[in-house]
Amino acid sequence: LAHLGFTADDFTGDPQFLVKRLHPDDREAVLALLHAVDADGQERQIEHRMVSADGEERWFRTEAHRVPSASASSILGLMIDATEARRTAEAFRAAQARLRQVLGNAPIVVMALDAKGVFTLAEGRSLASLNMEPNQVIGVNIFEAWKDEPEILAHVRRAISGESFTSYDQVRATGSWWETRWAPWYDADKRPCGATGVALDISVRKRAEGIFPQLVSRE
Image (tube, rainbow, N blue to C red; front, side):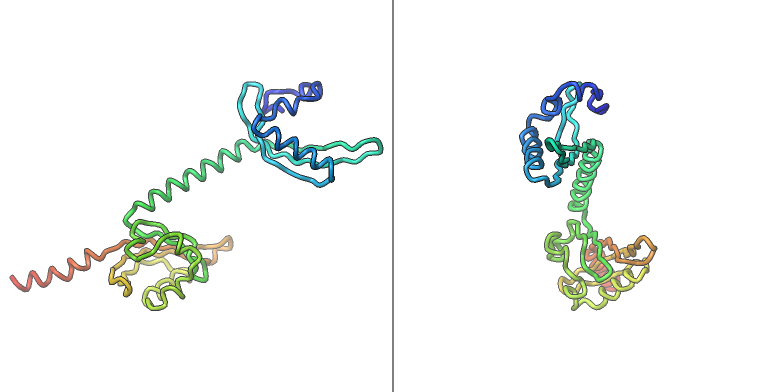
């Protein structure tokens, strides 16, 4: 109640206190839930908004229980202020969206694999160079999808086993060259449980390296 700017006396002194302080857009849903609990005795919970004394909207997670008695049953409610938790979650989702936007526009590939080699993350503008889309990659096992790339799979195994290193590989399917920084994931017991890779397309550089000696020899 203090978060709403009210006292216990405000609550107990007005039988309509809850109804009055419920956000108008949530009032019907909350009252319907209370009626349902009273009708069948099943515990229910809902997240909804309350309006504070100064007009601020605050989110609450409310659990409702029916308490039977000899005369008439009553509803016991537990209300937990979830405002800060929701704000934190929203800020986290916004940060994730910004990060994905940055990664999506960066000329790299950022990937994460679990201990079995299944993609749990795949982002970056350079995915297009591999004829890949993020939504199509998540959940795919790299050992099955890339079985014709044994050199790359050998590097994946090293990373999953706990080794950090940089590899230089040519993807046979596309002919492109990649510089990849591999690093293992660790679980709570500090055991390797997957790997991450940040890959840069160095095909232009490799082609230049091949052309330069030819130019020198002609001179």
